[in-house]
Image (cartoon, rainbow, N blue to C red; front, side):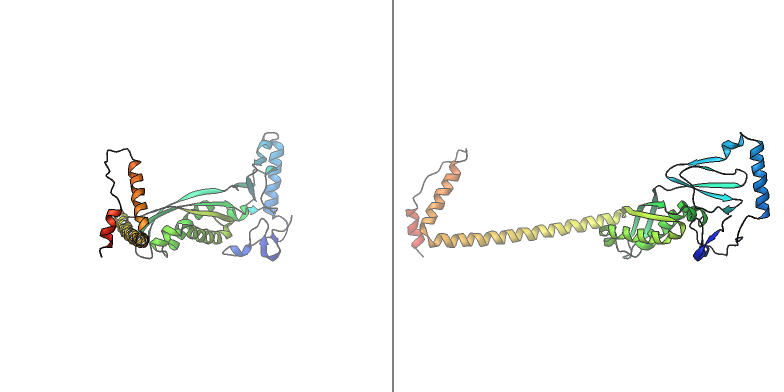
Length: 287
């Protein structure tokens, strides 16, 4: 039988001996006597009870799954099995199937105190997948549950360093930071965090009312400034028009005729008495 370890201290199947808390004692080559005895009696039992037991000796995994095999508690060399059909010995072999598809979960709503002492409730969604099935089975008891707990803790730690304005306006940047931190932490578990999205940021009712009053006051102030600027621009335009009309007396008569034309275009009962502009010239010269 091939050795259980590969060069550079890395076991077959993708796991590294340095990732465990204590040294792993492996036999250099071959199977132990107990394993050989169990293997012999298992084969004998399968042969005696053939063809009934043959249905328990073949396993099938789907295209999106991989199977991790343990023989009498030891990881079999060759890495994950599948997809397809493969042979096992039911008496001494243990199989664990790992799903390689992208999985998702909702991070429970977390009440967080922001950097500017505002209490907010934030929830998020995390997308991840298993990149190394062997490490996901050997290095962590439940990779999905562990990733969920780590995501909730990381969410609280990261958002606690942000102000309320940053939480509301820099969501994409915060999501990228969370994704990077989670991906680095779960790398030894054989888990790849693909995406983290902040779903909602809920504020207290009092804070919502205060922000609404602040926004309303700000809009009213901007509206008054815009109205004042409009009046200023209109006064400047009227002054320039008055200066032009004063330079050319005929311009006043043309303006008078234009006003008559605009009034006559409307369907109303207004009666207009034309007044010659020459009568007003005497009043205009008296200055």
